[in-house]
Length: 120
Image 1 (cartoon, one colour):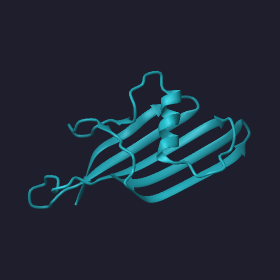
Image 2 (cartoon, rainbow, N blue to C red):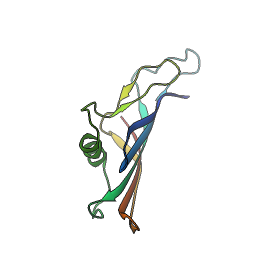
Image 3 (cartoon, rainbow, N blue to C red):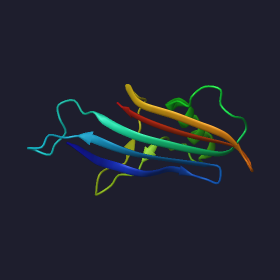
Image 4 (tube, rainbow, N blue to C red):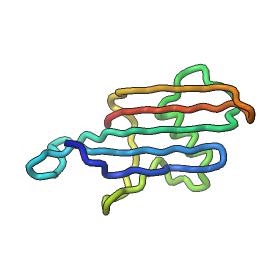
């Protein structure tokens, strides 16, 4: 059974919106995390007015660099906790389950949308 422990916006500016949800696998009997915690992450990034369209698919490192570039503080990839849980700092993927990048020219410039589902 999975339990969502963090969900929300990592950064939201005029040109960049990054959101994430983090779930941890729990055992049904105790409700506690199993021996080795496995975190499942659903991460999305929307970059408007990008300088150029990407040639390669967007990776976790690319999204982290976008967040660092756009945010005023160097807080990192912190997802707000839900229901009394602590905030979660995202780690690099160990296993990528799904990745998709869409990029196109819009009326106001290049738009890049990226989605990652991964575990760490």
